[in-house]
Image 1 (cartoon, rainbow, N blue to C red):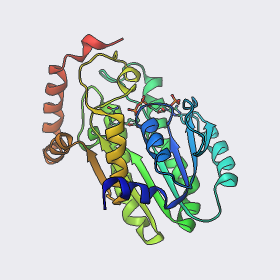
Image 2: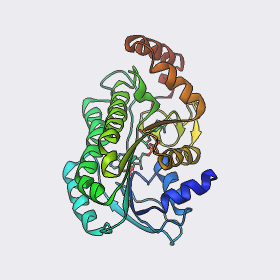
Image 3: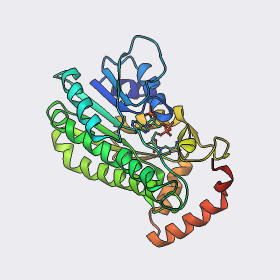
Image 4: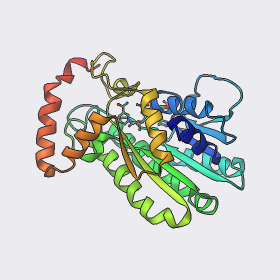
Length: 270
Ligand SMILES: NC(=O)c1ccc[n+]([C@@H]2O[C@H](COP(=O)([O-])OP(=O)(O)OC[C@H]3O[C@@H](n4cnc5c(N)ncnc54)[C@H](OP(=O)(O)O)[C@@H]3O)[C@@H](O)[C@H]2O)c1
């Protein structure tokens, strides 16, 4: 079966798709690909900003939610509980997240703590509040982690640690939840051209390039369709992840520091 067909079939398998962070980047590209699949699912986006408009045939609802605020997550899930169809499989994609570049706690401690809320606490809270529905209706939880989650990474130390959490949590949850018909998939992109660098405190022209959001989303959906417990997008990134995950952790951190220093990213700070 072609990749396009297997993704289309996978997406048509759900009665409800909930994604966080479709207003930009990888989330926006996932939403576009979902729209092109002709899925009958009700599709919900959770983010602070509403995604730009697109064609009307997708059954789409935007729910404004700041995922750094546990009370907002509680409220939005209460609304979702009434909106989600009572039957059919559910796909939850925990995609929202951001990073910060620089020596700890750059840019400041509040920003760092907010990052932990959005990248770690929010996926756990959202998944936890929807867990009974996922178990009774079946489905999948896809967590957008990162290549940075495979090793301790200086100068993005907290960000990389949030993604290590998401990666390990997701793989362990998959082992537990298979028996309920719920699969968990950790998607680990390397650099992707989105607003991510800007949000991490670097201006847009770092020259790091990377995958396009569309290619990353396509590969992510293939991995989800194949129920891979974890998947690094981009073959060069896969090699890097394979080797760095096998190094002693202190070596990986020392080599990572050297490699990031070589990029001289301080030139691009804003
Ligand atoms: N781009 C990369 O190089 C790269 C590499 C590896 C992993 N990732 C991961 O991929 C995911 C998507 O990032 P991206 O590259 O697409 O970056 P992006 O273009 O900056 O998009 C980030 C998304 O997260 C949402 N978000 C941020 N803070 C939020 C909050 N407080 N509440 C709700 N939503 C929030 C944003 O929505 P609002 O601003 O509208 O709230 C936006 O839709 C992230 O988890 C990121 O860590 C990215």
